[in-house]
Image (cartoon, rainbow, N blue to C red; front, side, top):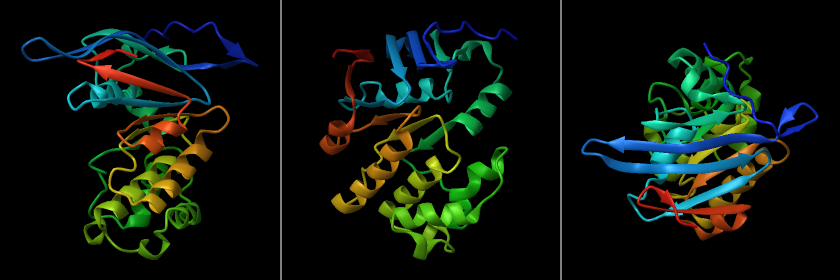
Length: 232
């Protein structure tokens, strides 16, 4: 297995550039380019907001950067390693150990309690399962009183807050969040954004897909997509 080309920018032995997309392209059947030759560098400590009309390629780009999907051409260099060089087992390990996700569809496991869902990344990885840490995160997003119930009893906004708590529990180096405030009122949205921003401080990164002006205003950079390409 190739180790991947190493990036040249370092800070005390740590790569400053966390993610680099190089001519990243994803073609759908019929030759439609959902992502079209994108070049993008994301640094540690950075919050990037990705915006664009429906169908512009935002969620597809997020999936490629997060090693959830495989590019048709081009590559993603993640923490100095080419994703193209990794077999699926190594990509899965990278997702478990270094990445946090907030999906639009939440993807909570219905047979697990809310607390068990929040702690699931710890159970799947190499971390010690710490229910107290899970409860503390649920407290942060206003869901501690719902810790022992099942996701089917939650509202859409409650499921979203649980998904955000789950995304940070394993201390990932980057969080990918697809519309993290889409189902939330303004107060809950601010609590979620505060939690994500706190996690991103230092050498972590946060990449959000959003139509929410408040989310975009918190980002250091805002990227607009159109027809699978960065236009500004």
